[in-house]
Amino acid sequence: MPTKHIKPSKKPKIPIRITTGIPSFDKLCGKGLMDKSINLLIGGPGAGKTIFSIQFLIEGCKAGETGVYITFEEDKEKFYAHMLSLGWDLQKYEDEGKFIFIRYQPDAVKKMLNEGGGMIDSLITQTSAKRLVIDSVTPFSLLYRDELPKKQAALELFRLVSRWGCTTLLTEQEIVHHSPVNSTLSFEADSVILLYHNKKESKRIREIEILKMRGTDHPHQTYNFEISKYGIRLNKFSGAS
Ligand SMILES: Nc1ncnc2c1ncn2[C@@H]1O[C@H](COP(=O)(O)OP(=O)(O)O)[C@@H](O)[C@H]1O
Ligand SMILES: [Mg+2]
Image 1 (cartoon, helix red, strand yellow):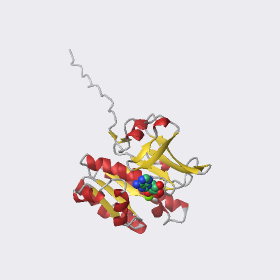
Image 2 (image 1 turned 90 degrees about the vertical axis):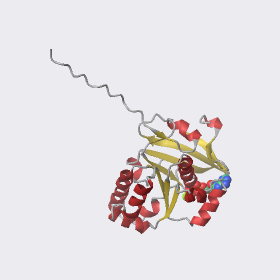
Image 3 (image 1 turned 60 degrees about the vertical axis):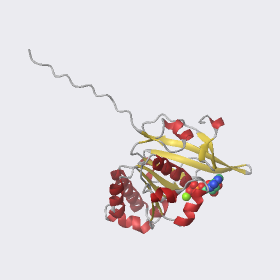
Image 4 (image 1 turned 45 degrees about the horizontal axis):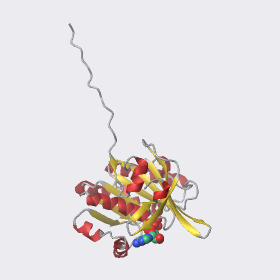
């Protein structure tokens, strides 16, 4: 009798989730961001993009992972002092080799793309970084005046970042009212998270919304949140605890 070859049953893999350091946010999306996903965080000035990003990187540092923070505009000393106001000692994590701060000029990103990654590429490999933030990609996209090269460059950056295999947050500067209007990357990204900071009567209200997250059954509504000495925390009454 011929032997029957029974194929081993392939169980679908449950995607690994990466906690953001904001437990109330993680509850909205199946315990965190998808492993190795590229996530877009869009908001206007003061909306909380940088705080969200650092909270995400610190969560990794606490678990012994290395995180890379690429920024265009911040003075490192001033920046570390601001983060200390939230109780986050970035210098300590830097000394432990867990937090890597890289100040980059927008045109250096252009060069990095031409070099296929250059110094950042080797840094990510050498440190086995698991988390990456580029805060923000907007100054880089402003280098391109015409729409087509701007889109091509954004896609190239996206491809390069995908190759690094980190769970990534890219921030984009845009004041959000309903949906992002100028975001080139929102179609490519695995998730788009919107940070609102709009005026209702005399008060500005902070709200967060997951506009899209691939492979995730997430709510389609906005949630109030606060920035306090604990960083970002979604308000309990909004159902996210
Ligand atoms: N220690 C703190 N306590 C409370 N709120 C803070 C603290 N530090 C910053 N914030 C709030 O966060 C805002 C800055 O958030 P940030 O993430 O830097 O914004 P973005 O990167 O989107 O421009 C500040 O304008 C302030 O309202
Ligand atoms: Mg910022």
